[in-house]
Image (cartoon, rainbow, N blue to C red; front, top):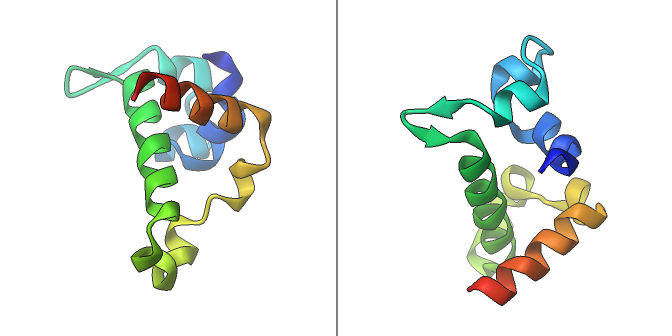
Length: 85
């Protein structure tokens, strides 16, 4: 899960974005009794689905996954999603 750092640093909590919290600390914590790892995976899936939806094109700048879509970890995660769902 540590391979998600590049994604985590771009899209995670304000504390980790400001370097107040290391990515591994963020991943090992909980928010409202939900693992931050689970939250990150959910956010990746929602980001991908938003980018597939043509209705979101007007909001592309808010949901653009171009930065991470080139990352191998994002591609492999989406592949794993397809096998699970």
